[in-house]
Length: 607
Image (cartoon, rainbow, N blue to C red; front, side, top):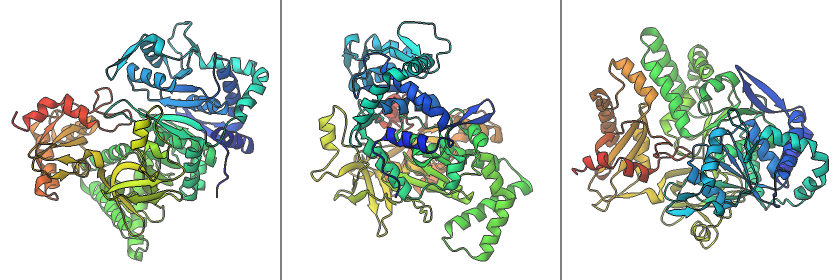
């Protein structure tokens, strides 16, 4: 059993003191990754903690927002804020000023730390007043009293409303002795049951909700990850890859897992992910399914462009890998021999090309992982596990065991999580990692739990005799056709997204007499397909339509008559966060797609 820590900051402090020479972060500088050890970083955390307390009037337990992308610097600020009992509120870099402003009003944040000039511009914009979901917030509604702290101030002119993180750290270092008693006093007040952080849900249908996450919630999750034996010595050596934003509960778990398990955090970002993987070769790679889909699409599209013996070798090796992956625990000797040969000649090279040749575990979460995608990575000889959970479960409920991976399931419950399926098919959960509810939203909190305290996940699921869970759809996203038939769109969308060309697929048909689909295409794969076919990279090209038509016909073959896609349309461009079709965590906003592409959708129903 892992050591039981009294709080997140004490866990971090214990790690730094117990393992001063252990690598805490690996950060890319130019073309190489550089190690930063706890002995170097602990004094910085203490200086930052003192700097935060000297940044203005900061009440005990006040909120501090971290607006922007995840970096070593933002993690150190996070650790420092928790050290003095502040509640940290990570905010996605991609959000608009009015949503960022709403989060500051909602949490009454007293300190603001932003990534760069772009994020400072958002703060300046919402401080002038803003309107969000038809409510106006005047400047005097904003509680932030201290100047904004900017981590990367390049290009910013000096002004009274901000200071650099470097200046804050220097001030904290100078005043550390003076503030030492205050730091200790605040640290002494922290209890495991106290709130550590607020993490906002995506807000696909309304104003986002701040999920209350305690020190106990987060630490219980990490303890259960340890009990699941998810990480091995290889991971402790090669590190945990962290490109997910801290505003994503999955990313936040990885951030805290570094010090909890003593593994280096290998820092990256979405734009540099592919190159950073090859440069760092981590031991643990956690990502949302879309990332794994894109990686598979690039490999398979490259293979489709090969000819002759090389193409035959690639197909043969992947076929052997797939047979080995699906054969079960005991493989016949002839298959083991073929698998070893395929690995030496092809599969090991493909793993190295992806930067995953040192990866013990690939972990998929945040959305459903398609079975064909999971089988592809298993065929490469990579252990890819699907987990399941929500922001409210901080963030996990289930995980596939490393020794018994079952594609199509999200695994078994973590050791202290209890699961059951309600009479209407909804998955309910209890456990120490589950949030107590939402900040300032008593009605939403009441709706989230049943009379016996079970958390309502909102997902439809089944649990087999061995405890493996299959999630079949979102309870609130069931479509009901005008004929009274219920359709689970997620199941069909997963089938439609099997082709690498498809970035997203949205099934429609609520209140209609038949189902249709809206496609958004992946620009990179579209360019590759166009080059191979000798056509323009145009989503409306007849050849692209033929590919999608064949995909729809293949999908329809496995559906009931009322579920089948009668026709489809293609978005002129990909779905994006800026375009409004995706949340900051890259989930499709079904209502936003329907609203934005209403003309295309109506054209499928004769309007």
